[in-house]
Amino acid sequence: MLPLSAQEGEAKRVDLGTGVSLELLAIPPGEFLMGSTTEEKAWATGIEGGATPGTSRESFEGESRPARVKEAFWMGRTEVTMGQFRRFAEESGYVTDAEKPGGTTQCFDPEWTGYRFASGVVHPWKPMEGKSWRDPNFPFPLRDDFPVVCVSWNDARAFCEWLTERERAADRLPEGLVYRLPTETEWEYACRGGSKESLAFWWGDEIEEGEGRLNISGIDFLPGRTRTWPLAKVPWSDGFAFVSPADHYGERGRNGFGLADMCGGVWEIVLDHFDPAGAHEEVHFVDENPRPVCRGGNYFDVPGNARCAVRLGLRGPGYSDSRDGFRITLGTPREPNP
Image (tube, rainbow, N blue to C red; front, side, top):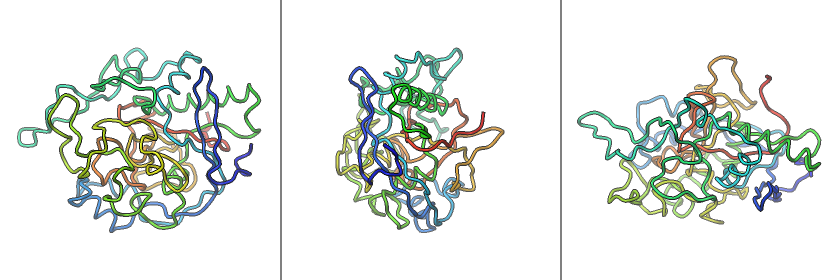
């Protein structure tokens, strides 16, 4: 089934074996506005958005500008889940970057009690050895339907390569297509759900209309504590102080293309390397000091950091974090040359 012949919204289920599957949706080619407006950046750094004003972070988005996705592709309805990644690791024997000797991953510090701005800032995350996607140091039991976290760009690409080889061996992969990470342009286009406007979120510009749609810092007590995350937050409970299950919000949490959890949840690692001047319409790679891009914000973020245009550069291809995951696409190859 070729992506170019698929109808928008058509679903495709991929069997990963042992009762585990993954759902993809057909995304048509099209045009959209990439980046953000001056007004959107001002909201993001204001009292409601809560992002830190006066930094270069919002400049990474670039100004709102026309962009085009030239080819149709398929995209995972959700991020890759714990259960799906476990299936990959069990069948392939793959060892993630965090699990390798000397490997670390960024996790929640259980001794953290607050930022302590007056006496010296203490952040709630620190690199830890012995932690990985198998144990991201969450203060609650893991679930197979949680998005997988503590995986790197390298790990995400390895999952895609495994799935490509598996489907090709079973003669289920159309010629000329591969499973891979989405490009930045594909990701932002897909996140906006078919909108031709420059909107902060896929549903519009009002964060208040996001209730019941996304997992973000809200009025949820931290596990075993009587406090919420500090700093700006949405004025409702989304049911989870940390990560929420994939597609937990159902139809209300799906955008115009039917994709779930595109804003908030976990940062989604994409294929491109980071350019602080803004995303490129064509996939972008560098030869030295590559920093993969992540998109979409996460469960801990302030509202201003979970918009369609938000983008950050990771520390490197082997970096992983308990706020970062990924979703996959099926399309023509876009990988960097070896």
